[in-house]
Image 1 (tube, rainbow, N blue to C red):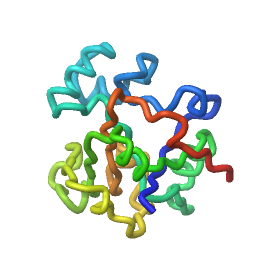
Image 2: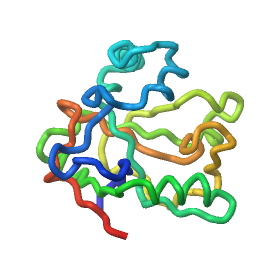
Image 3: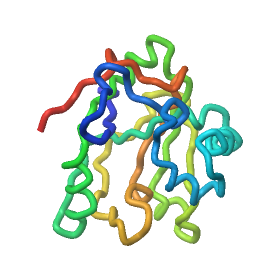
Length: 174
């Protein structure tokens, strides 16, 4: 147990260079964070993230299970998953080897803050044993709502150095 999942656009070099956080990926798509932060450059967005909390820019989002789509959200989820490689992250080994600085959970915004669904809510866990592996409610995901994954629970792994090395990752072939 203690595995989490992360999607990366196909054609990546993750198995050679590792899984990069925003801070370690200056070629990352800035549009999502430009809109949220009001900043324009990679460096400015990293500073904004660090003002949210220490380590935020070195965070890597992960789910407790691979994406499951339905006819309702097939376009938003299946198309996304089909364009990506799925990696399983060995969180227990990251923790054991001292690379996991912190772990945060973002519960479904609809559960935690339905009045303001644009806030990203992150609660710090004290231990990886607090990861909730109950099934995710994927039917809540819909691009029309503006934030594909904001409506389901996900985890943010704060990684020392901002890179999960390849030895902690397994490519899941579907």
